[in-house]
Length: 303
Image (cartoon, rainbow, N blue to C red):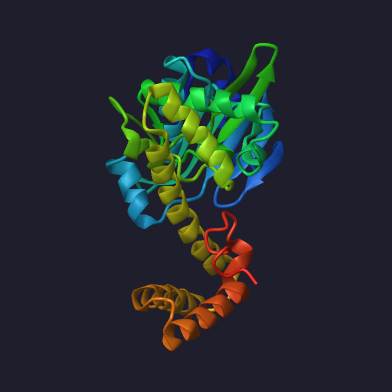
């Protein structure tokens, strides 16, 4: 077992080293999917312990010899964010377990942050949320100016706090991040692709962002919308594959995409185009509509 402990918390070393054996028994599960997050106390410190899913064999080799594990990257990047003057839950420790020289399990421990995610803000409306959204746009500009590019900049990974001074934000789940010298319009538009279910909110944030930097607002909004629509279209299909049981779903997706492309090539007036549209609409409402959270396709297939 390899353990890295923040010097500030070395007095908790013995308890930290027992986390793997006690993980299933300690604290409250606050998230469970591929990875599991538990909120607990280690001594007098309230923490979140993240247990990463055991990597497949190729990644086990990669993380053992060629790349830093997700847990280690979480520790390093959280420290970088804090050192740059931004907020991220303070790293406490990393634990990596090995078998026959290969990584098996890893844990990242950080201080608990009681902020709420920005999910509801990013899927809501602009009206009544203008100040929060302006603060978020300024925050994002400041992050990018500092060279911090969170590669999973999505609502679940951004926490919001309110105080008398206004609104502030904190980044979590930062194992996918990079430090860059500068960003351009295209990089920003792509980076924001996961952010908003609401087109209205995305356009507002992007408009504020572009205005702060003196960029072309309309161009920026168009590029951000293009990237976001592509992401949420793919997300719709991925969700259908995950949620609908049956080997036929990938074939349905292929038919749907092929029919759409062919119809657009033929134009809307031909009998074949009308037949294709009817089949697309049937497939959409049968398989995909409930996962089209961004309404990428729904306007085209509205009843």
